[in-house]
Length: 108
Image 1 (tube, one colour):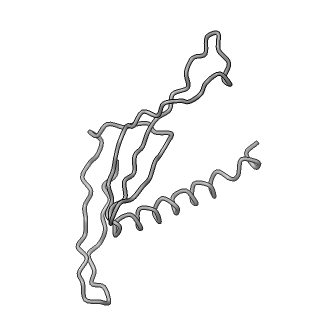
Image 2 (spheres, rainbow, N blue to C red; image 1 turned 120 degrees about the horizontal axis):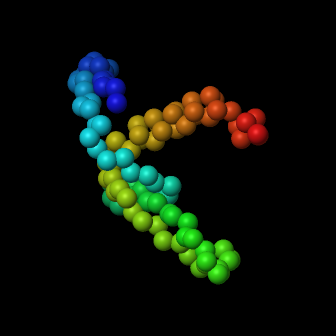
Image 3 (spheres, rainbow, N blue to C red; image 1 turned 180 degrees about the vertical axis):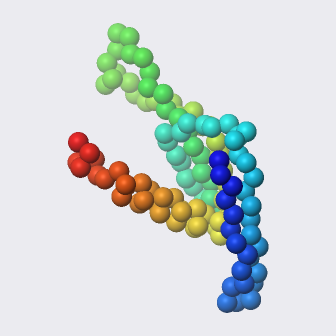
């Protein structure tokens, strides 16, 4: 993973923002998630990522299933101040992805 940095600069209100340098994250485990549950309490946001694995159906029909279990794989907690830029960055990243990929109708 490439190292990412944010530059140091002074904002209009006089506060100083100091550059952050991300260290290599290649030793972290990569977890697969296809579900997400988000809630908040007080000033904290809780984001739980989970995975649903479809069962092998032997002598059963999909309509016979009442529920599927979600296995939580990671839980992150964000402050109310830090969640806003995360959501903005994700929305921007998804927008760029969709612009490059086109809509499903355009791909089919």
